[in-house]
Every structure is written in structure tokens, then in C-alpha cells.
Length: 445
Image (cartoon, rainbow, N blue to C red; front, side, top):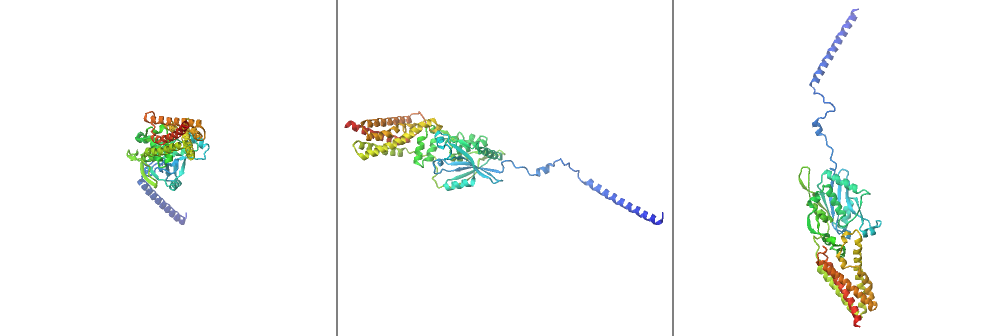
């Protein structure tokens, strides 16, 4: 080997040795650094502190807010008792609906027959909150909203139950004025969501009320409706009821909610109504706590009408043609009204109108009056036999009315309709007196 080759080989050996030293040094440095690092955590292990810092899933129902919505009385007969609904707002999706159990349709198939039988169908449906507020604003009706202090799970349950009720196969129900209406449906839903605590707190409270006391106070602004409903409501309407039954009135349920409480997760007692907002104000006269007695005004009106009929009957007996025509027409109209009411009160005994049953007003408005509707004009146009028949029927109607008046003083039923006797009995007596004068004129002749 030449010297040049030997020199090159020596240089190569020195270079390789230097690289080895560098690599060894770097390896030692890496080993030293790794020795200072913490032991790695297995991928399937969970750091408790890191897990606590991660966001938790929201509880179902936490995105919901719930209100009891109550509308005050309106102008139509079916609006006199107010209305209510349950509002549910989803704060995530923005869906804002009011679940409304007070929907009916006059164009519904067999609406009139169902109504007469006491099987009227009502429907429940979710209604957009905005248009609902607008409709009550146009009608000038008061609207109050009470947000309810329900837990997230209770809000979710309420929403779920309402949605199930809104399905086509579930949304219709047989309406009952006092036992199953828009307000009792809301009451029962809230009580179910609250686990029965609404009834436990308020249900048996006695306010010395009946279905008739509430009906009178809410219809007294309309004398014809007030009188007509007082005639139609039977003895069941005078049975004392507790607050639970009174909640068929939406405004009563609204006021009762103000006294109810709930318990939160920490065991603290809170008002069920978190807040109360008057969304719409009304210029209507506030609903009275009780109706005022119309006994004396009814008695005055009845005495005036009865006195006029008695006077016309007496004049008719002496041959006054105009008096005979007017007396006959008034007798026919009154007998038609009284007889139709009486016939209706008999027919309801064969229907589901339980609140109109066993009605002592039948003694004042009985179907016998329908015969007098024909006999009274015949008595004026016909002979003595017609006048005698009309006279006997007139006396029979008065006898029925007097017997009913006696029942008012006996504990036979709880019905208290003395005001109606003050109005109707004098009119019957006026008709009977006039017909008796006609019959007496034949005897005197």
C-alpha cells in the first residue's frame, strides 16, 4: 500500500471516529432529557380534573319557558267566562305557541244536534302566540301571562303531554260547560305535571260558591243572557262547590295560581307564578265578585207586565176591539216563550246536559203554556166554550207556579231561583186574571 493510500485511510478513520463520538453524545443528551419527563398517561385513562372542566349536556326542558295565559271576558255569549291557554316558548328554536283547548266550529258536522244532546265537540291545537295576542287586542280583551316556576323536567313533560294531546287522534273532546272545558283541561294538565300538588294545595278550599253564583256574576252585564241562563240552570247549579270546581272559570284559575307554591331542587319553597305580566289592558267593567240581586227589579217588572195584561183582559171583556187584539197577541207571545222554555227543560232530561236537570223553573215555564198560545187568541175570537177552556188552562198554569213557589221555601232541592218567581209569577197571574174576566163576562151576559 502506498503512502497516499495510507494517509487517506487514516483520515477516514479519524472522521468515522468523530461521527461516532457526536452520535454518542447526542444519545446521552436525549436519554437525560427523557428521564426528566413525567410518565405518560394511558389513552383510556381519564383525568378527573380535566373531565370536570368539560361542558355538560343540558337537561331536557331547560330550553323551555312556560306561561299560563288568561284572557278576560268578551262580548259573545261563549266569551263571557273568559279563556285561557298554556304558552310554551323554546328559547333555542324560537317556537312560541299557545296550547288552546277552546276551539269549536259552527260548521262542524251535526253541530246543532250535538249541541242539543250535550255532546258538543271542542278541539285543542297549538296556536302561534303572536296572532293570538293580536286577536285579543282587536277584541279589546284583557290578557295576563303568568310564567310558571316549573323544573326543566316538568316543563319538558308539559310540552310532551300537550303535543300528544294535539295529535289528530287525541285533539277532540266532548265539551262540558262546568266539568270539561278549556280551563279545566289546563288545570288538570298543570296538576299532572306538578304531581297532584295543585289539587292538594287549593282543591278543597271552600269559597261559598256554586256554578250559579259564577254564572250570574259573569253574565249580569247582559240582562237577556243573565235571565236565560238562570232559567236553564237546574238544581245541580246550586250545589256548593270547592275551589277545584270553580276553576272552570279561567280567571279563577289565574287567581288561584297566585297562591300556589312549588319546591325547587334545593328544597326551597317558591311561588308557582314566577312573574305576572299584563300583556293587554281592557276598558271593560271589571268582573264583579258577586252578582247583585235583581229580585226587586224583577218583581217590579213582573208586576207591571202582569198588571198590564190584567187590565187589557178586563177591557177585552167589555168589548174593546183594540184591547182584545193586544191582549191576545201578548198572551200568545208570552205563552210561546214560557212553553218553549218548559219544553226544553223537559227534553234536557234525556240528554247529557246534567247541569240543567231537575229544574224547579219548570213550574214557571212548563209546556202547558204552549196550549195557551193557541187557546188565548181563540178565547177572543171564539165562543164561550173557548173562553172557559182558556180560563181553566190559565188557572192550571198559576197553580203550578204557586206550587213551585212553595218548594222554594222547602228543603226539597238546593235551587234558589226566587228572582225568577218574582218576574214570571205576576205575569202568569195577569194572563190568568184577564182570561177569567173574559169567562166571567159570558156568565154575566
